[in-house]
Image 1 (cartoon, rainbow, N blue to C red):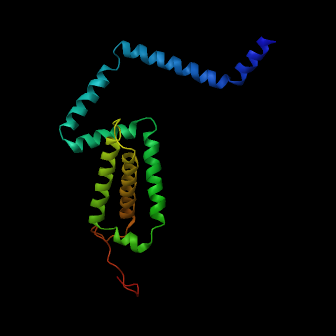
Image 2: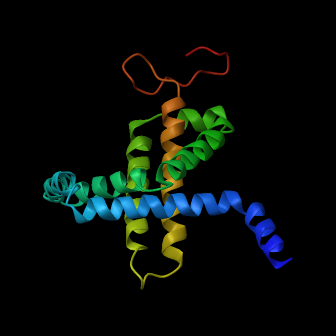
Image 3: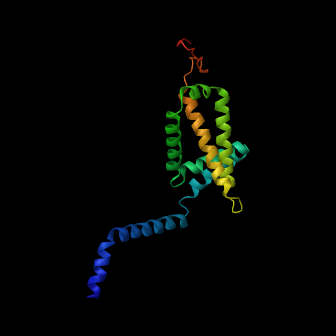
Length: 172
């Protein structure tokens, strides 16, 4: 009787057990490959590029952080969600707001917000940062992406400058 109950439990959880076994086999394979130095050429190339980028100071460190955020597990999904939220919010912006944010000044402000949000997010990785740092970093980053999205959708003349404000008669 107990054997039948155990078999029923195993059958009920067979998909979970299968994925656990696949994960363990994959981890064993990766461990074996790492112990035989298969990843050394790739690791050396990544380390060299990180050293080159780090020589550029804060912009280089920002690019390193951006690279690892995008390519981290789930990282691209998070970036896609932020961009999606920004596009949805930009779609509901009134036309006067869209025209106001169609300037180079708004673009530079947006880039500053994204950079500040990224720096706060990196600062949040330390264990002794206050809880508000994560929230502020995310909010500043999202605000910058929102402004950049509005800037991208703002009407512009052929030179890329902000389009002239039409008068009440609809003339430019």
